[in-house]
Length: 136
Image (cartoon, rainbow, N blue to C red; front, top):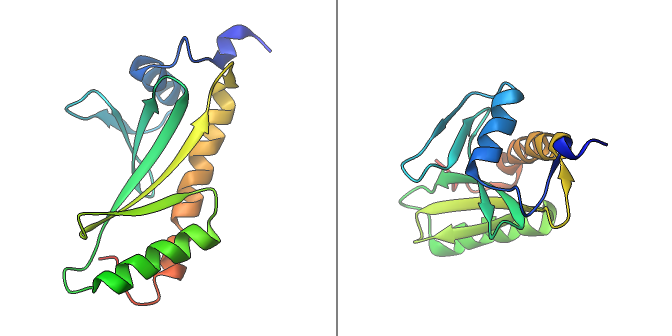
């Protein structure tokens, strides 16, 4: 494998992620912080964490009339069933789902793109765990 095909903790930054998803022909824009926002089946924020992880994050609005118990139960179901993802609640009004992909000494660009596609696929399964229609 060519070193140009790898992302390492030394090369991981917003520009690297932008170039990667641009080359993979994804529709994206940059938010006010310069982070990549990809519009696929879902809106996904693609960032890096401490130059050691690629982080995929998606946000879902919670119904205003959904009780705290229902919201937390949904979070728990997602965390129990879709174990590679992490679901959390932000200020009782937003369901945040993310996945950290370790980079460390190197990860192939292809692997990052395939992981993104898997993340979007898993997001598509969240609805089956929303038994109480918590997500708007």
